[in-house]
Length: 404
Image 1 (cartoon, rainbow, N blue to C red):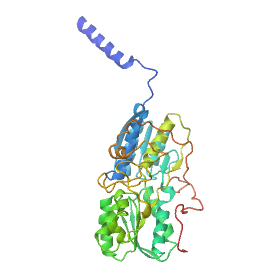
Image 2 (tube, helix red, strand yellow; image 1 turned 180 degrees about the horizontal axis):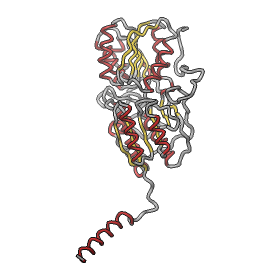
Image 3 (cartoon, rainbow, N blue to C red; image 1 turned 90 degrees about the horizontal axis):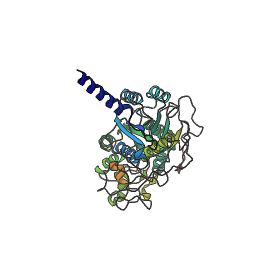
Image 4 (cartoon, one colour; image 1 turned 180 degrees about the vertical axis):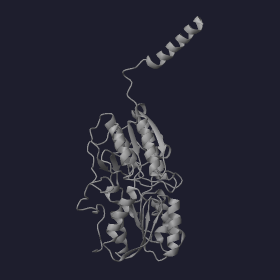
């Protein structure tokens, strides 16, 4: 019994030493526990944003500073609330997230902030003031693309509105901005409004149905999924109508298609840049590592903008010389092309967005000191606030036809 007791005591002593007496190296950097929280998934855009964040987390020096975990909760706000709760309880330092609702997550976000968690929302937003929102939606996609379509139609015509995922701040802000412009032109009639769910396949199916019901449509305003919207218009044959949409690769390639050009395709490619996710992640890490002092705020990412005449094919996978679309053999048609920025996100290339792998030899580059604060957007990025007097002002296009 004595020998067994001594053996057991020795085992416990060794175990305790392994747990409590492991050497601590002062030069080892703190590793931050970061959670990537996605709501809906399955489209190219969401995969790209996740891959951009993963690639940055593997890029020096973040590769030694970040412990990144990904959680996909789906389109039910309650599921994302539960996911946030688990992250908070697990001791998260930061949560970078595409939130499914601007308001439903507020209570759990506030609880996390009180526990010291930094919440960074990208693209979509919340109205809880302790969160950082990093989004392009206040930059005016809805109103600017709507005005571009009105200009193309001369202020008159029947149009479709292809919306995104209902309930999100992104879809609400886009549609509100577009409708504010369309309302100025009595000659513009929205004959069909439907949800493409930011998915090119669903957008194509729903647009085909709308075309069957309204074959005399004159133009289409589309959120993400616009590559499918374009396919539906092309498949019916004959003259093509102008389309304004986001930056899917298949949509941009359509403007370079000689057959589509002959059939009269015109439009604008703007919309949601996956690069926003990378910008948000870099801001979060600069704050966590003490390199930036910034209280919670809504930050505006620049609005991408390319007319049909400004689409330029990249040479292979290289993003250079102002190119903004890739050969169809390299990416799916639903791939969103705005993945890189020379100033804000030089660390990302095509492989990083497709596979989540860091660029060989690249290190994290510091962000500019200045940020562009987003204006207050009631129900979008703030709760008790007033919209600016020039809400829905045009920033990249001007009217060429008179409205009310």
